[in-house]
Image (cartoon, rainbow, N blue to C red; front, side, top):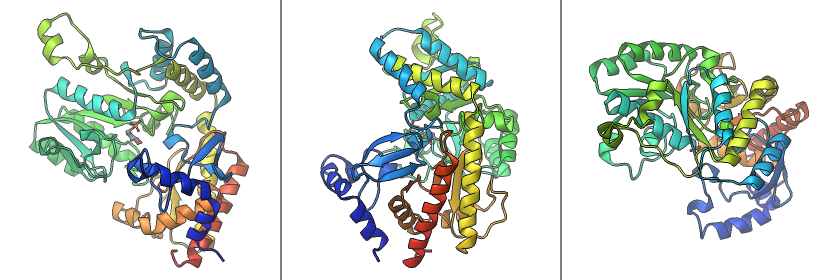
Length: 443
Ligand SMILES: Cc1ncc(COP(=O)(O)O)c(C=O)c1O
């Protein structure tokens, strides 16, 4: 009987070869920290719908789904068609174009807190810009954020996110205060004691795709407290936008932030980002014809690929499909089926874990018996961390890949094209992987 690692090597000889080449070009052989994989990365060739294939011909049910961007699945025919058409008409015309207006209209229709917006080329830039706008508007310098919440890899976004902040100067570290989420009293005390906070920023369903959930009540309390202390509330909806509901987490929970960061689903699978919110905040970018304002106070905004027509075409189509077809309802239903299937595996295999998650995101932990409602898990973060520690997740992940199932760090992003068969195949693959882990004493 092969071990998990032997099987992994056996199934992926060409990936192993390519990885040896890649190591000469890229640190850890990869182009994004989140794609690092021991003992080597897998090299994919193509995808369709909910499935993808690697260079060795192995097929996977995919729940990485473009790091959460592909709620419509891979290569949705309508996205492919508008992208092909626009590519032939020009990928960058260097001036304004109508698609960006229509795209913005769709976004504003879905997310009513957005009165005005600017497109960026990534979620990192969106969060960076939201923080800049908040600082410029309030003329204060500090940002309050929450432990493990990730707002891209800019100086400000990376701090406290559970990732290394190497290269971030101490002066900047001192402007970001990191607190545990779900503790509103601590937030209030912090804002009360220091008048220099420009903004509070968070991932509204919690960090790591909601693996460590922020509670809906906490969002409502944050809204009240930030208002009380004149601090701006920024929702980083890069992951949750257009997914937690068509209007994101803010519409699902009825909490209006001052600024919203978007990316991922916004661009229909192409690189994108946006910041939107109250007009007077976004208008910090606007030239006023006043030399002092324009030259020193205004927030400058550039970006070669902002709202380029190819991304705009894809994003316009994606937001139209979210608004007019049951994309979210279908993905949510499939996620529910997946959650149920994983829970059954935990139950039958006597694993003290749980599968939880809001809308079409499914997370799991493997170490604690849990009485949560399977939507917003209420276990404390230390327990959730113990239940998702690398010693458990890494062998399980390799075993899942061996069984034809790909997910991302303990999170499944379910799309509107995952079918009942995809879900049932995934649950079977997960059970096989758990069995393999048990045989090796991992679980
Ligand atoms: C919540 C959140 N904010 C910001 C980002 C950064 O977005 P991007 O990868 O487009 O720069 C990410 C990326 O995963 C994210 O999850």
